[in-house]
Image (cartoon, rainbow, N blue to C red):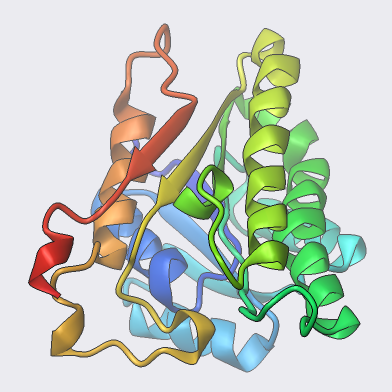
Length: 236
């Protein structure tokens, strides 16, 4: 499958996994729209990726459905189509359930779960036309619960279930749907600052390579749920 000039829309694309994936897809010849909550951040990230004719930065808050509708329309207006959508935007707040605030709970639900639905709802008509691919970024926290993560676990379990059900709903339109469930990734997630001490972790571009591999898979085959983890966590 040639990916030359295919178009990807990536939420949360200003840094981390979204940014790393955008870089990999651009190197494969695709055109990419990345979104972020702040327009200046999205435009700065797009500019730093180079090849300005093939990448744009768009403002969108995934918790706002109208933002996502506008972002998809802007992508189509600029590039003419949408072939791949990566619902990557997410956040995590970790605290015991009795200490977790209503605000933090609602922010995670609205971003990690509602946002994934908003992105699919806004892009599904375009994906029907292109017979495209919808990919969500879940987490190993979507199958493994752990202490101080009740809200985060709830959203990521939800993303996995949502994506798998959406896969069954949409495959009759020749839309492929997958979820990627990473373990530890070297990103700025949860205000972490990546450094040399994170070399043992999955790198953002590794997730980008996984996305690329999914896109190159023979259309008859669908890896609908992918778990990925660091090879040597003992090296941390």
